[in-house]
Every structure is written in structure tokens, then in C-alpha cells.
Image (cartoon, rainbow, N blue to C red; front, side, top):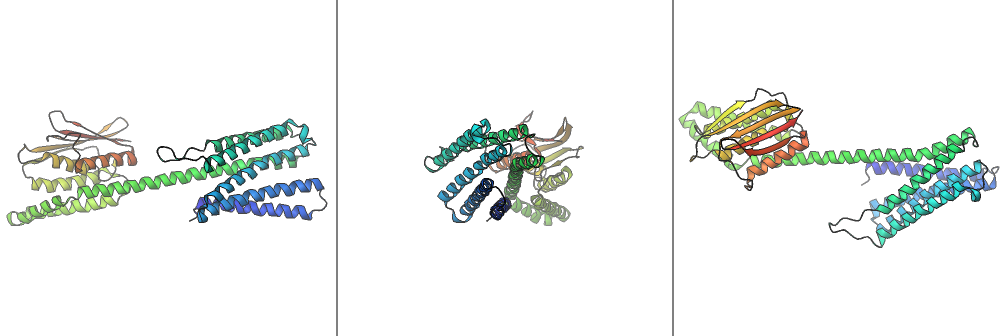
Length: 402
């Protein structure tokens, strides 16, 4: 399928093709023009037609026929005819200045540069068709010869431009402006094409990053929504209904609030206010404190809330601490949640008094922490570090630049 950049390039090629055909027709019907000059114009426009025809044929070959030899041949012919245009322009400049090409240093220099660029193009063609071989990592060799071709072409264009400036007094005002426009127009088109390529590249990277963030959020949600957590919560509600109906209602409300915020967070594509993530975390902890009554305590020091962070950041870290730290055979777990404004950013700390965990422990909660770390980096250039807490337990610190 033709994307919009290929469509744009094709429109330019078709337009150039029509201009070339129109130029030949004009020169054929203008009989009053000097014979030698008319032949030059016909040749010039013919080169333009051949160049654009090769470019179009190469595009069709690449998109529809998948014919690599034909595509390679068209690329080479396109380069050959494109590079011929600069010597032709040089001939035009010398003719307008009534200078003999054979005695002109400019003409000899342009021919030398043209020969070197063609040699580089031929070398690139041979390397791609006869000597191309994948590297150890499976990728193709870099096409350095095509860079050599572009270098000599650029030098030729600069030489031609300088020659026009130096000969401006020998040219009429119309000729001077016409040649400058012709020389600068390809440069402008190339710059525009480069801008478009950069724009498309950035757009693709943005979409890929956006897709990656979405995939990671879904993966994190899958890790969060472990069946045993839902089963245990529903079981706790079941027994509370008979023992303490009011508490059962409260747990049901908190659990519903937790699920609602969890699903809402998955749908968010950008950062959210910290207050939303804090409410999500508190809803989760309310459910867990009922399940682990007397075994789980939380200390909040979150006066500073004027910042944003990726959704599903704080809550999974707290859930990770609960999973690691709450154990009937251990002392009650206390979780400390703190936010504070620091230099050029904000710091969030989640510390606990649990047993901690080793770096080689590779279970699901740790995968979730890695997921959070990557999303922090992509969405707000934040960082996440895990250290041992003074006095025992674990401390997770998040830094978000402001």
C-alpha cells in the first residue's frame, strides 16, 4: 500500500515527467530557435524524463512487483540521469557566458566530479547485487558508496553555484535568476523531503512508544488482577456478611472502587494527577486491611500532591509490599508512603518493615516493578530505585522531574 510520503514523491515525479515532455514539445515546435541550442534543450528534457521514469518504475517495482533486480537497475539509472543534470547546467552557464567548454577549468572539474559520482554509484550497485552479504547480526552492510556519490554530487552543486555567482556580470538578470532558482530548487526539495522523513520517523517512534506503553499497562494489569486476590477478597466479604454486615458493605464498596479505578487506569494514555493514584492505592489498602486485620498498618505522609505520574504506578508498588511483607508468622507489616518536593522534581517513597527480597527473586511482583520502571522512563523521564530500608525491609523510591 502506498503511504503518503511515497504518494508525495510520486506526484513530484509525475509533475517533472509532464514538464519534461512539455519542454521537448516546445523545442520541437519552436523552429526559430538556434539548432544547436534546440538540440541541447531536447537532450536536457529527455534526461529529465528518463530520470523520473526510472524513479517511478523503481517505485512500482518495489510496491507491486517485488522485483529486486529491476528496482536496483532503476535506482542506478535514476542516479545516473540525475547526476547528468549538473554537467548540462554547467554547459548552459558556459554557453550564456560565450565560453568554450573544452578550454574551461569549470567544465573539466564538473566532469571529474561527475565521473567520480558515477563510479561510486556503479560500485554501490555492484556491492548490492554481487557482493552483498549479511553481517553476523543478520543486517546488511551499510551503503557507504552511496554516501560518496551524494558527497560528490553536493560538491558539484556547490561548484556550479559558485560559478554562477562569479559570472553574474556576464549573465543577464533573467539568466542569473533562472539558474539560481534551478540550482536551489533541488536543494529545497531535498530539505523538504528530509523534513518529511524526520517527521514520519518521529511519528512512527511516537506511535510505537504509545503502543509499547499500552502493552505494558495491560501486562501490568494482568499481573495485578491475580485470581487469588479476587477469590480471597470475595471470600472475606462472604464471611463478613454474617459476622459484621456493615463492615462487609464497606469492604464491598472499597473493592468495587478499587476495581473501577484499576480499569479506568488501564484506559488512560497519559499521566494522571497523583491524587487519583493515591485514591486507587487507598481503596486497595482498605480491602487488604480488612483481610489482614491487625497485621497491616499504613502511615501516609503525602501533603505534597501537586504533580502527575503514569497510571498504575504507586498502587502496584504498595501491592508488592503487601504480598512480600504480610505473613501470619511474622510481625505486623507497616507501610510508609511519603511524597516530598526535591530539587527539580518530586520524590515518592514506599518503605515497609517486611523481610525484604533478593535481587534474584524473579516472581510476578518484581516483573511489575520492572514494568513501572520502564513506563516512568518513557512517559515522564522518571526513575525507580529499590534499596534496603534502614532497620529492615524494603524502600522503593521514585523520582519524577518537574
